[in-house]
Image (cartoon, rainbow, N blue to C red; front, side, top):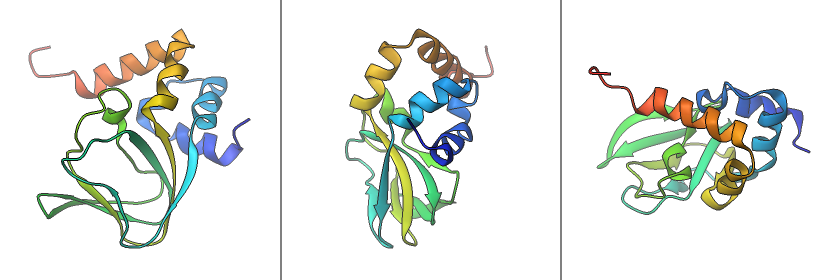
Length: 137
């Protein structure tokens, strides 16, 4: 069973916001706690990405072609496209401070959605809403 804090952290992610408590708990159970040291690269631009992360504590910076694009902190997340596409990372994410995050790999995520149609449908809708909209829709 996932702990309450991890479940609450997952609930903050827009991708998972439509899931009910049981479904959120299932997602949280699939995540593993990871610790990163200040200066450690978590994801490298151009390399394959297999992980999705939600930050519990600490801060990170996101760079594209060496230019800083944004800062991440507790409750922020990255790598959601890697849960489905497993493509190359579009940015480098580096821990600015010691950081704790909860991560899920593609191979943890896939059985979760394959075994739960309700979660799969809600996530499909969330992805479509977030990434599939354009001005002609």
